[in-house]
Length: 226
Length: 181
Image (cartoon, rainbow over all chains, first blue to last red; front, side):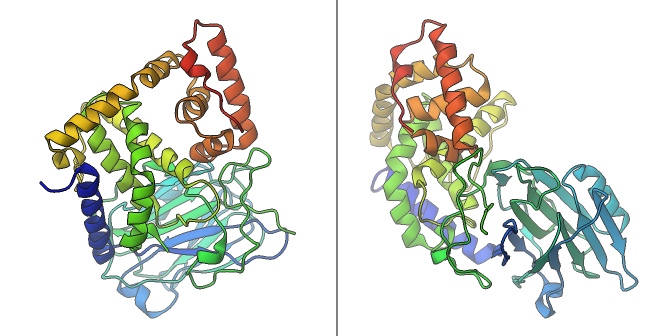
């Protein structure tokens, strides 16, 4: 072996990066545009596959309402999901299964997210931008017919805001995974930083990302602008 | 720039922190092969989380220690279940005799800290976590809060409680290494 452990590990890790770039990494991080007094909602949405190629088939917005969640099956085969309060993920999973969408739902405490690579991303690599609008609380999205195929699973991981389970989440991750889905392994939610290095479409200008450090904040994507 | 998509950026990040990560790990495990595995696992986990990590303000090392802490905890949980996870990048297979000797030296150098950590074993998890990062890993309270995903005030309160709890036990002086906010 040449070099030392550190150098060999570095080479292996760089090779790993290359491998991963080839085979996956379809996570799109879509920070939300919002007005004053709105809480920051960060979406890491990775949805891939043939269905994703055509249109923005999955829309994510913050909606209003009262029950913890609602799952509505549309006449066109689409399924609308609205989550007002982040509790009982198992029930939501069951409800989605009833609507023909296999799903794995995890709600994580503030500051945590699931380790990525929950499974093989569905499809060949189409990336999809997720449109977001919002008002009130919770989140909602629509799954178009066929977007989550027979052998596929919608993997939803939501980092709940520490201010309450009915607040817009700190972060949301949506993926469609083919085959087996790895269980959620909690990991710290990476630090939000200023957005000057962001490369995503829809990124807003600096000044909207706020690291809360004052109160009982922790690393969070919340903001108190306005 | 994203760590997981830019090998050069990752290399710079790695070189900045690899020593610190190895020291962090050998403060917690005393087997050199395992230390190599956990070092590799920590950087792999950093890659896993890197899709949302963006460098900038805030302490990189605090973030990375948070990752390392999860990796080490996950290892302990796995060990408890006697399951060995094997990843694509197995640290121990990259060690030659020379590396083994160097790793053992690192392990020796951190002996005192490992003992101090053992002394904290009885503390409640939340308090111990803050004290560990501040007293043992030399993070500031703010950085420890970042690493643990908790608020600064919470971190300070926990640190205070942890120290007070240890005062009531005959605590090793190492635990009393100062930590500034």
